[in-house]
Picture 1 (cartoon, rainbow, N blue to C red):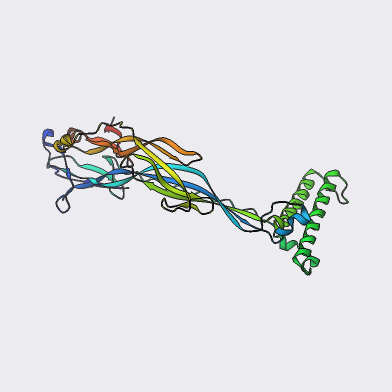
Picture 2 (cartoon, rainbow, N blue to C red):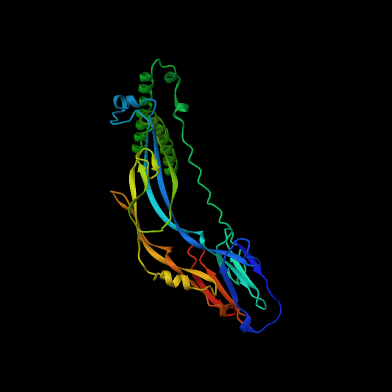
Length: 352
């Protein structure tokens, strides 16, 4: 966000002559003025999708023969699933709502706050720099045992994969026997106390899981965020927002490789619309701001509803003006605008 200080006319004058002049922006002609945009609503839809990738183990086809494990897949596969959908309205500069603030001679200084892309955020308030939040450190993945590090000389010298699988299965059964002996108190080298027993069992469990990976394979999980943007200019009835495939993930709305995820958007008509005749007669005599409307937004597919709530939409609202007398020589009025909707969040006279 940046703040522009517009200084005009330092001479003292009667308060009745001091007022803010606002005009539509004209390139090359709106000089000695602050130009600002009002925002239009863009709805950002963040789709959180989880990807699970299965990699078969080296001995997967022997899992049933040596370990009696049924249904172990022998081919690599990928599975996607939508975990959540969140909706966040954002404000973008509206090229149809751009104005220039010019102070007439003998008026007070005006402080206008703008975002980097020119959306008005405040009047007569100093800029407050917000510190960026530091991203949370991602936890380091736990170190896993590589089953190849556990292979014996006999296993490595085996003449076939089937023989290697047989020897690996024997290692798994030996580990299970050791765990049972410790739990029954029948092991040759019993741990001295409970903590030592817990540590020993944990180590045996890790080794068993490492050997089992050679038969059962491994599944890695990855989470991705996809962003879809929607501009609410009109009512929508069961429009395809995007498509989703269990094997390919999030796809464009025209990609028939996935099933459709729909959006329905309904203007709730919470703000009366000005007639065309009234709009044409409206004269700019103060700071223009948005009065956003509300819309009902629903995102769903044939199985479930992901989002069903109301959202603010400036396109379904109207524009109004702050009285010009609020910014005369006698009065310093402070105003805070919402950069997302362009609505007034707070208005007060200085010192109140």
